[in-house]
Length: 382
Image (cartoon, rainbow, N blue to C red; front, side, top):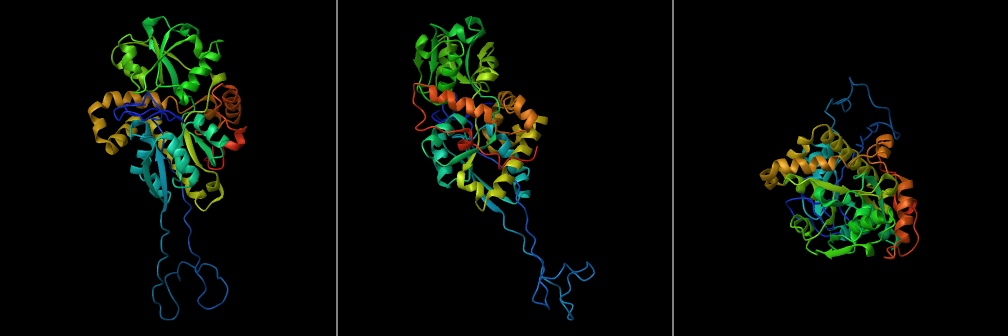
């Protein structure tokens, strides 16, 4: 994602305001929907029962006096509190565009954006204090296993954004090449850590086969540029983009399709799926998807919307556009191209739950299934 934050993870830290965060939760929070307008039926002035709508020639007349009948009162917009990533940034361009272009308004919504870190958002959504927000799938699984009542309802990142990156000149071209190398990480937690474990498991290695170097302040990109480490964890739409903007070709190690994990997506409280705001939430999702489609077709629309929301991004427009384009590339997968943008893949979730349950980190408090963690109830029609 262009100079902003990175995708959210259940334990990843905040992202710098100038670009996607190499740490915890950079991208996370804002979504849209379509609200059904309800027209009041005109009751018969003369009979006790409901009468059919009068002919157009008679509408506006109120009996013998011919006085004008009052116009129906428009339904008040439904307020939705939307939780995004910790720092406003280019990665939330679809939410900013949907808001500024009137997609949310036309759906009968009044949207309030709040920026929170991933763990905080998960809790607030579960409590109902935030109506809808962004969270990593790898945060949702352990949260649900701990009894937090949330559901993942729309896939924003259909390709898992966490990666390991290195300079192309390092000789690191595959996960197997990481053996014995110095690898920078922010800590042993979050989506980037889980991704590293999954990447190594695919080639028969574990993190014990690496020389791990901790960067709690998320300085692994600078460390790699200076040669302090050979490789580092990061995000496909952040560090490699920045590295190449600086003139250094990057080598990127991403999870193969068979080992993908669920990326950041929209979450709601489990009770909201049958609550009074269900239609409004579905309308929000639909409006957000519409904005994503518009940005896919013309990324400058997303860039302009982000700059309108965060004026300082204009100082770094080319880099921001590069991050946004890298972000857009992660929105779709073979599954979503077949089943619709935002579709939630149950098989991917089941595989991911099994993998996370097998980790020595003991992330899951109790067994869960894909049905416990996800719902398709708010997805727009394909």
